[in-house]
Amino acid sequence: MADMAVSPTETADEGGDLLLWILVWSELVTFGILFAGFLVVSFFQPAEFAAGKLQLSTRLAGFNTVVLLASSWTAALAVQAGSNRRLQRLYLAATSVLGLGFIAVKIAEYSAEVASAANPAFGSFFELYFLITGFHLAHVAFLTLVLLLIALKPRQQNTVMATTIWHIVDLIWLVMFPLIYLG
Image 1 (cartoon, rainbow, N blue to C red):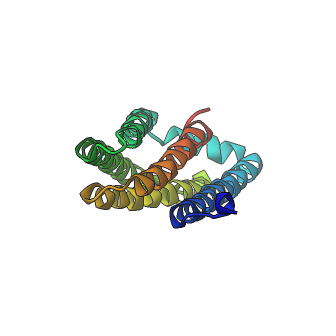
Image 2 (spheres, rainbow, N blue to C red; image 1 turned 30 degrees about the vertical axis):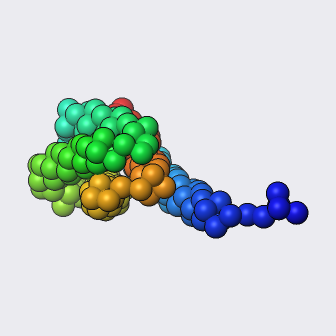
């Protein structure tokens, strides 16, 4: 009978895992719907979308891809640091700094693109572009703040949850980059 008892720690971990998977799947479904909408509209406005893509900076977006990949690496190192709180803080802070770098580059990119957004020659391209990339940017900004807060007093469970969502947001970018910026 004692073997069947569940400790409070095990129950908390199971609840955290469930919440984590709900968050992961809700992110994937939400962005999946946005990507599907982008593809459908691009099918009906191919010339406008092709012209809109030419207005984007693939160089800045490519640089941001490298920044996010580096941030995923530092996020993974934060989890791997385990009980070494000093290292965990360092890697969480590094991930946050890279997140801030992504935000800065994206804002610079937006400032160059906003003038094109009002041009009707691009159809719905820029509306969808700003919706999708802006929603992603909001996720990066929020998670950057969360990671900074966790870095102040890291706990392994919080680090694992936040960095897992961070990896999902990075994965979403890896789908978004070729979909929106390339050919």
